[in-house]
Length: 190
Ligand code: HEM
Ligand code: HEM
Image (cartoon, rainbow, N blue to C red; front, side, top):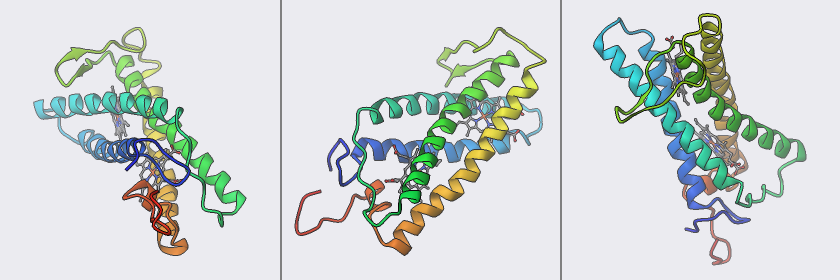
């Protein structure tokens, strides 16, 4: 399995980033939606702290992923794919990148306007993005965090649907090259 992406498939690092970040974001969404329903107990405070630490970890991973991706070539789209579909897929991927950066940043911003602590897994303090408690911006930051999250959920329906459509209807390598790797053809190593 090559580390770097080639014309035929995604490299191991891109695949590892994709699935690690996907799993963390799904977990983070579930934790976020559950924790806001909890009664005010010490457990709630701990779950909030966990949500923030995982969120900052996701932000760091996304920054690393983008930095790596900028050095890579992109595998070629399946030849039969119409131009509008290529454009739609690329636009959707760009939107996903923007959202997975903006969601943790908006959470961090909300936390800063609430002047709430942010300690990464109990290890070290992370400073606020803005200058302390801000009652005017706090509700807007929260609304942004929630809206961006639900926008991501909506786009993921299309993203996952497209991946499954490629796999089961088009029967091409699009999903395979992001998971186990593309099929070999004529004994060629891909
Ligand atoms: C990809 C990363 C993240 C995802 C997917 C995510 C998702 C969510 C979701 C779904 C909620 C529940 C919203 C609601 O229904 O009210 C939430 C709440 C919250 N998030 Fe995040 N979040 C992320 C990152 C962060 C980060 C990095 C921070 C702070 C450093 C943060 C701080 C918060 C806080 C404080 C709340 C509670 C808001 C309240 O008090 O109502 N989140 N998040
Ligand atoms: C939180 C969940 C997810 C996020 C944020 C996400 C994000 C992304 C992004 C940004 C790309 C573009 C890669 C690039 O061009 O650098 C991508 C590619 C891809 N994703 Fe996801 N993804 C998620 C979940 C999934 C799931 C559940 C599936 C499968 C069912 C999937 C299948 C794929 C495939 C097959 C590609 C490669 C598309 C191609 O080669 O053109 N993703 N994903």
